[in-house]
Length: 222
Image (spheres, rainbow, N blue to C red):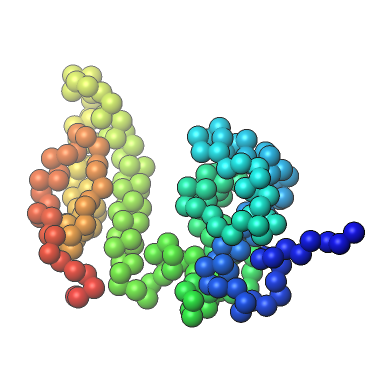
């Protein structure tokens, strides 16, 4: 019996594949590796994507892995990653595959560096500074909520008459900490033209303390 040659993913000549084909091939390799690790069949994955509201049929998954289908859409990547309990970027630039990858057609790097570049964690680009500001904002906000847990809970009490003794002092300390540690980041985001994340509804007055949104600033030109 003649074995059918996989026309795409099985080639030994890396240079024979176009860049977009190499990227797609690696995504499929990562999906296949993760699927097998979890002990899921192609039908299992198809069924679970259907339950999430965007079914990726079993034959599509089989055609990916055989090389007959050479494309994967962003919605497909997102929903399959959810089924496989993986972040989409983990499948796009999977460090688990090892070796190097061409982030761009003529820009080869190790997979972790490619992933960090894609997510904005790489520190060599000013353009990625914006993403780091959002991460810094999220980190400080999480810390403040943990440190001032009792004050945060006051948001869920509709009437101040329900507040236990000492609540106003705790709320004042929370707001003071926001002004000291978070507002500088929020102000800077506004100054360079970024929308700031929303705080809790009862803290909306803090937005009035921020400078107006600067829509003319181009960070790349600074």
